[in-house]
Length: 126
Image 1 (cartoon, rainbow, N blue to C red):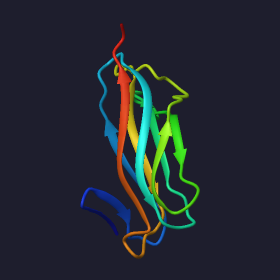
Image 2 (image 1 turned 120 degrees about the vertical axis):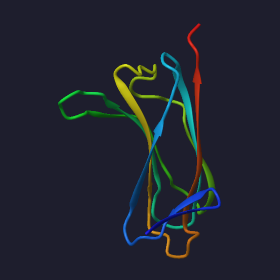
Image 3 (image 1 turned 135 degrees about the vertical axis):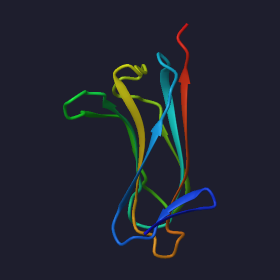
């Protein structure tokens, strides 16, 4: 069972859980940075990914990861930065659908691993 509470997302299941949300950008903007806020209270890792799906009609959509962050280090509240966008930093809404994915380990105490928010920065073309 997965629960969202008090603006923090955590996983009450027995295995990793994947949470995905659509991200809507103005067409043509340049994605410059992604920042994730989280609490990592154990040895397992939380993964964060900004990606896109090709809007294929009648076929299988292809997925591309644009940037990725994996927690590591001492337990506690953290901030993850991804200021390198590996693929397709310029948004093309005619061809792609954009998503944010968070993979959370099980949190038996409700406090072990929590996702708080993501901030995605972009610039309008000049």
